[in-house]
Amino acid sequence: MIKIISESFNIESEFEKIANSTSGAYSFFLGTVRSDIIADQRRINGVFLECYEDLAYQQLSQIRLKAIERWKLNGCVIIHRVGNLAVGEKIVLVLTSSSHRDDAIKSCEFIIDNLKIDAAFWKFNIIGSEQIPIQAKEKDRKKFLTWKDVVN
Amino acid sequence: MIKIISESFNIESEFEKIANSTSGAYSFFLGTVRSDIIADQRRINGVFLECYEDLAYQQLSQIRLKAIERWKLNGCVIIHRVGNLAVGEKIVLVLTSSSHRDDAIKSCEFIIDNLKIDAAFWKFNIIGSEQIPIQAKEKDRKKFLTWKDVVN
Amino acid sequence: MKINLKYFSWIRVKLKRGQDTIDVVEKITFKKLKPYLIEKDVIFEEIFEDNSTKFFLNLIEINDENIPLNEGDEIAFLPPVTGG
Amino acid sequence: MKINLKYFSWIRVKLKRGQDTIDVVEKITFKKLKPYLIEKDVIFEEIFEDNSTKFFLNLIEINDENIPLNEGDEIAFLPPVTGG
Image (tube, each protein chain N blue to C red):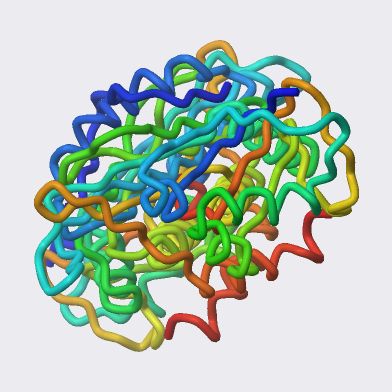
């Protein structure tokens, strides 16, 4: 299941939706808005998440299917929020379930690493009323390259 | 925070307890009782979790501190249930938070891998009214060895 | 014929708008669309000079700029993504 | 003097009890405790033969079996753990 939404979500409820007694292992990654980001020497008021939804759904579906196949997942949820988000708010949730621990853990890490570089979302720091685009990180691109022998 | 309890827990509530706006990344591992376990050619009714609590608290504290130091975590929760658990029920939750994604993800994986081989819990399959001890897995021991260059 | 342009991230901020619908000659290629846009608004020069930007035509990345465009096509201007 | 024994997993199941309090001579070592227990209940022979079992004295793993025991000590019999 893939959701691109402006409202928040509840982690327990998302777990319940895919909870299944053939899965013994669930791995979650949650990304939230940090308060200690400094842009233009000022603390941010929050972030703005922009999305090209048609493309993002397509990209997230591909990433999700790749993970389900590679790790034999029973369930896989990706939720990404859009719009203005205050400090501390949830941005993204990746949740995977499998019979086995390693499959759930690795697939969850793969999905967030892939999403970071291949899904049509853009984050802006909000300073006052201004949106300042965040620079893409070379670190994220390098990290994703480490998956090339694991997933193709 | 470490909890060894018989009652269940809510993942969202556990997140809220350590949610902090200096953390941008949260990683969770949840283990549950699978239904498809066959013991003595019969499906299990559930599992029984036995614990040597004084020792387990000590061991989990050491594992937790090791992870907090190694990965600069802002928060770290380990919850392990004890007693009779039905199929589908939650057994264990590991939750880590950090400024950065990789630190949260790696530490969470390390903690569950270490817990699996170094914390005084024993699992039994319940068939009828009988408790059948589950065998320790060589796979878990081998997996944990892969951390030896990462954590000391 | 009409085509739709969608702008994201710094490109949207720079242009101060998220999209345009423009009227162009039939079967214009993406390659020929570029100077046409620069002529209308010099900001496009900077946009096309940034080689980290990707262009998608109807949700598929443009690899060959000689691809001819059709009525109703959607071209998206995508700087490197920064979600998650 | 009295010492406490705690049994876990298959050892508890086999002995059909989770603990014992036993009365032993002062300063008995763990090494000498073993034949004493086997004499009282032959099941301990099987328990001590399984070399995957670890023994903890007051929450610290016993590495030297010549360690002398004291009044109120707690010795735990721990098969390989299987939690999580």
